[in-house]
Length: 234
Image (cartoon, rainbow, N blue to C red; front, side):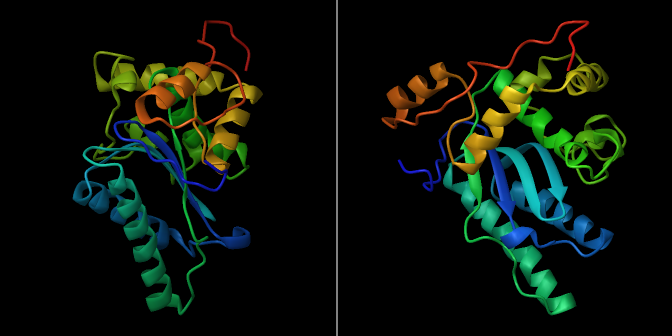
């Protein structure tokens, strides 16, 4: 496959990004953010998409999601979300669509790499200087994860569910994971896999995809995210 081919795989989570041309803002105000989030919530149910993490940035959307029934449902879902945002811009502001022609997607290896991708998405606004911390950014799933926004409608993946026996325990464990952060090699692999439409994961994941789908996707980067221990530095 070429670097421009979008790879969507059955039964795997995906890190998805829809961005605008030349970094043009897609949201004009808080109402636009709320409208987008409401459409995501409605459409994920309609197209049987499980949403594990999300962040709305001024010029793009980042989601970590899994299609429950068919991988093409992810594409249909993303097209519907993008279309509704564009229709609102045209109706309220007489502004044209600013989206790039295609969204980007990276299948994510279940396990530590899924947790790493969720962490990457929810920390991204702070990393880009949009807030002092992930907690202080209002347009991501992190505050919902911590119980600050209700109702809770994230779809917890098995890896996240194993972090604790209840919502509060899982949130506390992920908060520690977020605080420790990812190292630069891990972040670079996640970024590169997304922009090149490759796999986010280990060399073992590359071989698993080759055997299961007869698709060879060559990745470069670390084998797996390091496990966090008390006292680890960022």
